[in-house]
Length: 130
Image: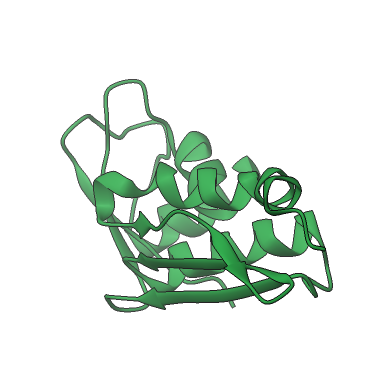
């Protein structure tokens, strides 16, 4: 018999990742069982966030054979993000891409000549990486 608690623990990083984007409209339902698989339902606001969730799923289990997912995207490809106090582009890159080293892609997409010159309240676009 499949252990719901064990599967919930295994995929907890996925649920936590979706919850990180709740301020942008991401939602996740309480995981349940669907046959012998964990059923994970939720919504994310963009392809950028969906790709981040997929990266986490694949890092938890590259085959994700014990996961049934129904995660839908409610918006477009790119993601709008408002810079918060204490943010820098490396921190934003880590949030959306899982790596701080992709900050230059964000800077280029927003015509930011100096990545160190961003300010709280500034809205930027997080592009989908190809």
